[in-house]
Image 1 (tube, rainbow, N blue to C red):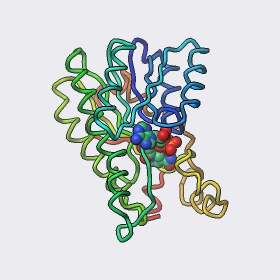
Image 2: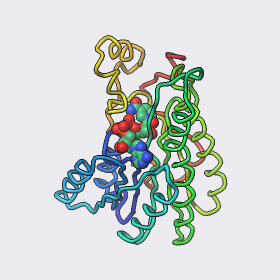
Image 3: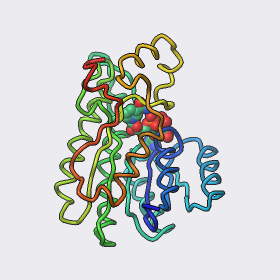
Image 4: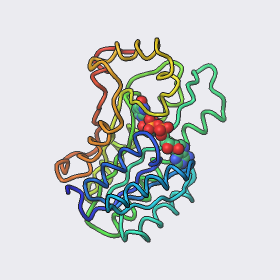
Length: 255
Ligand SMILES: NC(=O)c1ccc[n+]([C@@H]2O[C@H](COP(=O)([O-])OP(=O)(O)OC[C@H]3O[C@@H](n4cnc5c(N)ncnc54)[C@H](O)[C@@H]3O)[C@@H](O)[C@H]2O)c1
């Protein structure tokens, strides 16, 4: 029980990577707040699954692109479990739009959900961690695209590039308070965000072939990295990104 007595918030926690993180943090003993914006039935099912395992979890509906909702989310976590030790900024979307074609509303939406949310999620969680004392962990679910251009997915790459520098800047600023800030950069993971690729056998085969490990990651393979970063074993890690990409960044630049 690496995370016994810890309290975690996971944004976008009722599907894909977020759901796997919720399950793994709870399995390791943390009480978990599951942030979600859509599909309350999935959140309820996840809460029930955790309750059946004897874990403490509560769902809170909050749109992380809105600072007022993030404030409500932090307050709900403190009300439910008394403190916050681990903040996982996971919620994210893609538009798959190019530099030439991205509209203002696509740009604003992706940057608000992927980056503004992580900035204010970091700020508000850190304020609470400083108030309660004892440090904390902030884990930003970034992407290989924080470093690696993806033609046709411009706002997404910008948002993850911004998250890269958020992780570094906040990591340096917050170190004095014992708060570590680390990014996790997955490659391709089998989740709803990749639905269209996974539904196209030819495209999926091309992607698999480009990944040295030969396949997409399972969400659990990202969640285990997050759980490690949230635990004692990662106490000297901050202001950096850990990549879990099956080796793709070293083998297929520009895919
Ligand atoms: N799947 C991949 O290949 C991959 C690779 C690298 C990084 N990532 C990142 O992992 C994170 C999770 O993505 P996923 O693959 O699990 O996809 P997903 O679509 O299953 O999860 C994204 C989650 O974010 C939630 N969300 C969207 N807008 C929100 C909002 N305004 N407020 C709160 N929640 C909101 C969605 O409801 C969903 O639960 C994202 O940040 C994504 O960029 C995914």
